[in-house]
Length: 292
Image (cartoon, rainbow, N blue to C red; front, side, top):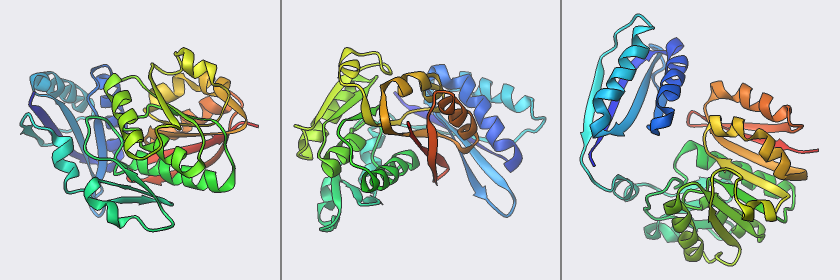
């Protein structure tokens, strides 16, 4: 099905609240909203939405309603993306990504991994997580730092996508990792990627919504949990994170924008977790929490 890309420019002061309003309005539809700075000197940001072509009119209506509340009328541009495997087409031109000791690369870039680095092979797939997105790279950076500081024994990757984070943990820490995703396609891809990276013995995967699966409960507590999802679910599941995290354990969370940091920190502090560090990359935040 063809996709539609809709975007418009907005003054910097309105960019975050407006994109947040669009996120809320389109959350149930699953259409991603991105916001990024395009002109620092003029303080102009761009808001971008991708949606199914047949939903174009609906999404335009939502945008018009949200913009009407601002009292401004920016020029809106649309682009139709033909029905094509855009993930595969895009990845053909993507360079390897380095985050700490980790290098995420395609099969055509195997030779770029140095002796002291942990190479992670991720080729084109219809699942999220190639290392190029700021959330995935941020998690890899945080994982590398955490595993240098502390030894772990039991890990959970919640919302695994391609399995890149689970593979990173298994490769660097040599410990068992349970990878979960709400999407069965992602779960299948994660298992295959673990096999291709030679860590299938250490990575198991289940399809689950949040923590609602017997396999997740059976293996708790986890001394390392990583979740690259969205701010809404992260906030909602704060209690479940605390319940599944071992004493002295580490939780690394991403998928949130800078303006969402405060409410996530408050939700996890209310469950007894402490914020250790925060990492900003490409417009996204990654947070590291510990449990005393």
